[in-house]
Structures are given as C-alpha cells and as structure tokens.
Figure 1: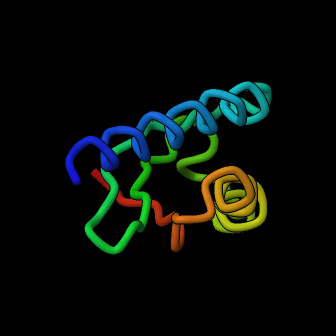
Figure 2: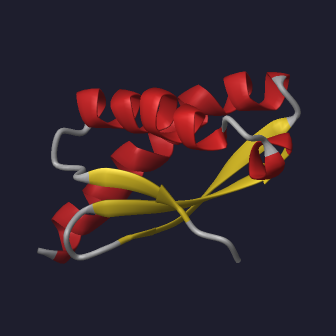
Length: 82
C-alpha cells in the first residue's frame, strides 16, 4: 500500500512540475502539500496565484483537470492556506 502511495505522489509531483511554468509565467507558483486518504491533492498557490481572483478557476480548470487526466485516481485538487 505504501509503495503505491509513493508512486501516486511521484505522478502528482511530475504533473505539477509540468503546469508550474504556466503559473510562473503569470508571476505565481504552486507547492505540493499532501495527498489525503481519499486521494484529494492539497496544494498551496503562491505569488500572484495566491491572491488572484481567478486562482480557483486556474486550480480547477487547469491544474485539477490536467492532474485527473494523467492520474485518474485523484479525486480533486484543493488549495490550502498555510
């Protein structure tokens, strides 16, 4: 079980690395926080993405949709404020 959790985390990190340049181009970034037991990915949006009015749209339409296509086990992506 633990091995598959690590594999899932690696897949998620790889996808986040692929979308990161798009966020950075707009002055923002994304940090991986956690994957919950129900396969919800928790991330932190930083920089411009942390304060942008469209950050929820970016998170759901961009990051979440891309992540679910590559890693179908993922239920959703949520932003957490640290």
